[in-house]
Image (cartoon, rainbow, N blue to C red; front, side, top):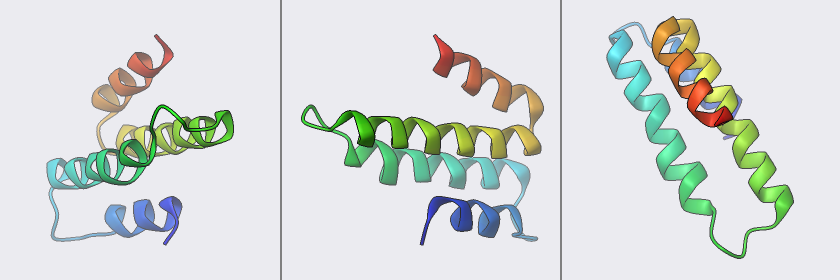
Length: 77
């Protein structure tokens, strides 16, 4: 399942609180994006990981503006 489908699925959960949705989105970042990167990752893989992180952080921003903004700002540093 691609990242966008996973994000949409999590955002549509009716029984999850906003905090649980954010935690689930961050779990995708740690388990699927960061774990696939290593010192021998190509530039293409790194750029794809950064793009996926931005997508997830923008989804977090739709749930909690301040938290999403902080994640995006930290990425830009």
